[in-house]
Length: 558
Image (cartoon, rainbow, N blue to C red; front, side, top):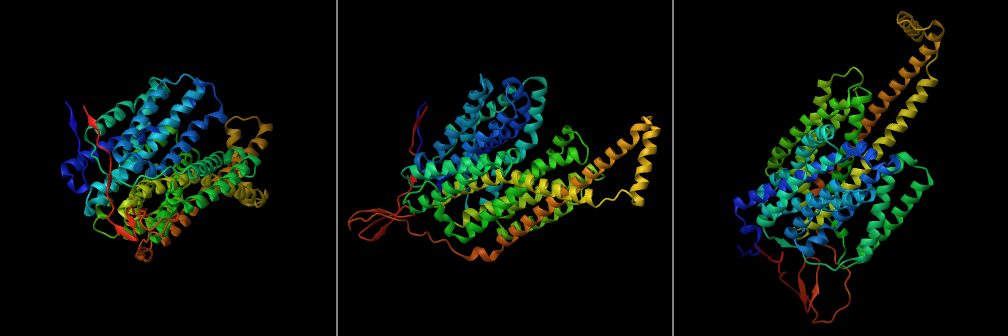
């Protein structure tokens, strides 16, 4: 059977088609989230199977992260080149091919290449889906639609690691990547048949210099952030990477601001509401992604639970997050977004303040309650802030805005864990030195503790001559534990500070400014030559003419 599919505007899409599109985009979002959440589980087996060490295994996370960030930043340009429908199908197809190649990888270089392909394809799926949701739903339902687009981040992390962990137990790491193939194949076929053709932004010329400088800046920055804790932030290697990132980043900004058709439209930062929404996005993403791995470490090291318990503690909060983003998304269609964002930030600050009181005697039930509130606060922030980001700009800039927000989110994802490790390490060292210097051995309390430990060791049958040394070792362990607890408390207060700064950026006073696109640099033209303006219109003799909407080119399917 052969049919021609005509290009339609979002207003011509029926409610039934909207929900069908929502379902098939949801499959892609869940597939990407599951794929992204399972890689860390497989690292130990991959190290053994591929015979790589700790200095090599980090490339399995760093290389796809760099590829994902670079392609995310190019979302606006690629959408103008191929259109949202074609680009989405290419992305989910590339994610499927990368997962299949990962499962069949024959050596370490091939594994890295296929993970890079997966990162390139999967990285743009959330950005394209968010923009499509914003396009196909009417203004009164866009908050709900953007909430739906976040559900993949609740389902994937909730079930992906558990399913992947079971596959690792009964099979191998290759089976973990086969888990996403049925989902991605189904998402590809459904998108091929039913994803509507939508309007696309104007096609731009490829900005070679912008692409080169952005790739250099992003690559060196992410490498420095991912390896800084291991190599040392003051090492020559990390300082060189940061210097290259700073120079190429400055060149990238200069190039993009001078280009008439830049790869990344940095002129969007002329919108004050957009800038403030990006500040909220960056700081909250840095806090959320930084506390994720740190909380897993806290559960195991400070509270004494095993890795299985740490994995299970992630499921209820993620499921609550999935329900909360839907509810908050619906609220954001009726309540000003800044009210929801500020409410979420206040909850964020409060729950991090509560986390600062966690210690060895905190019960798992109490800790789980804190985790659930943390995820609810995140739901109150992310969906309304995404809506505020897109509402601050013209609809013609939606795909460019989602790509730019995705770039900042990817950098914050890398910076969050790096900053978390820096803050914790610095505070831990500070408290350890203070405890060592300010704990005299002749105090009454410490003498009593020494006597109690010695009685316990004698009762346990330890050699009498070794008891003094063992007592000192117990004292050292106690000081280390106290320093670690104090460092955790300081780290959570650092996140309270981030939430407080974000509240300032979310205030309604910033939302009053209107976006005015600054004129792009244009070459001199004759009076009768049409010139493309920033919103896609053309001028002739100095008079604007209506812009012709761009659409995906219809293709014939069978």
